[in-house]
Length: 326
Ligand code: ACO
Image 1 (tube, rainbow, N blue to C red):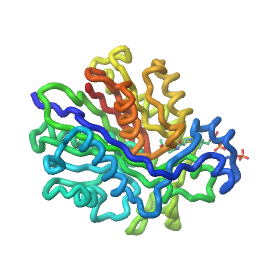
Image 2: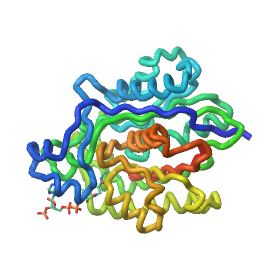
Image 3: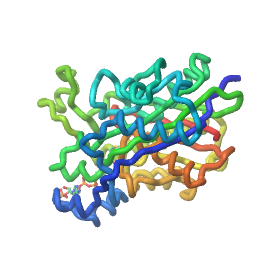
Image 4: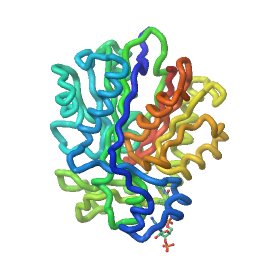
C-alpha cells in the first residue's frame, strides 16, 4: 500500500523581534492586556527585503540540507500562503526558482490559517496516488504587511515566518488521514478584503471599500474556532478509531493561547501533549503549524514512531485536521 511519510522539516523566523512593549509605543495597548487575552509575548517581523518566497526558501533549504535531500528530487511544491507578493508567479513558483529546481509541479493554496493542513492533505493525495514521489510543503507568511498597525484589536495578534516539510512515498504510514472543512457563509468573521477583481456581492457588503488589511470579528471568531477545531479533531479521531491515548502530540494552529486552552478544556485533551509556540511567535497563519512542528522535531519531543495530530482553523472560514505517524 502507498503512503506518504514526513522525512524532513525546517523553519525560518525573521531576525527582527517586536515585543508587546514595542507595540505599546505604536498603539494604545499593554503587555499585560496582550498576554492575558492571547498568551503572546512577542512576534517576528520580516525585513523589507524578505518575502513569503524568500522565507520559504530559507525554511526549505534547512529541511533539505539537514536531511541531505537533493532539491532536484522534489516533484511537487505546494505553498500555503495568504500573503503572496504576486498572484502569479505563485510563491511556490518563486520558491522553485530560488531552489533552482528545473522541473516540478508548483502551486499555492489559499486557505488562510488552515492552509498548511490543506496543502499537506493535497500533497498526501499526490504521493499516495503515485503521481509524485517526493513533495515539499511549506507555510510562509508576512502577516505584518496585511495588518493595520493602527488597529490594536488585530495588529497585536500576528507575526511572520515560514515552516517546511518534505514528504515522500513509503510502504508504511506516514500520514494516516486528514479532514478538511469550509463554510464560506461565515467569511465575514475574518477576511483580508483585497484583490485584483471587484468584490463579490455578499463579500463586498462587508468591505464596501477595498481595505487591504485583516478584518476580524474577534469574539464571534473565538467561539467558532473552538467549536470547529473540536469538530475537526473529534471526527478525525472517530473515523480512524483513535482516542487521545493513542496520540503522542497535538499541534494546534497557534492563533491564541486562550483558544488553545479552551479546546484543551472542552475536549479534555492532556495538556502535556499539546505543542505551544504562540507566546514567542504570535499567529503566523499558514506558517504556524509547520513552525511548531519543526520546533518539536528539533528539540526531540517528537520521536520516531510517535503519532501526531495537527489541527487548524482560519479565514474562509476553513478548518481541518491531519493525523500522522513519524
Ligand atoms: N490592547 C488593549 N485593549 C484592547 C486591545 C489591545 N490590543 N484590543 C482591544 N482592546 C479593547 C477593546 O477596545 C475593548 O475595549 P472596550 O471594552 O472599551 O470597548 C476591550 O479591549 C475588549 O475587547 P474585546 O474585543 O471584546 O476583547 P476580547 O476579550 O474578545 O479579546 C481577542 C480580543 C483577543 C481578539 C479575542 O476576541 C480573540 O482571541 N478572538 C479570536 C481572534 C483570533 O485569535 N484571531 C486570530 C485569527 S483567527 C485564527 O487564526 C484562527
